[in-house]
Length: 61
Image (cartoon, rainbow, N blue to C red; front, side, top):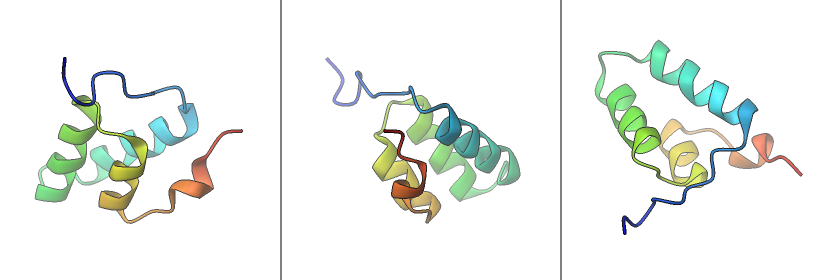
């Protein structure tokens, strides 16, 4: 079983922001890093840290 296999992807607002970031940074190392993290199930906190955004701003209660 993969370490991040069960990553929660239910935060539609954050998903949209991550996908926008990936599109904006397409063809760059940071864009590829975030894309790989997102596609491979890394947790939201780690992706947000890589993107240098505050995860707390996107938390859904």
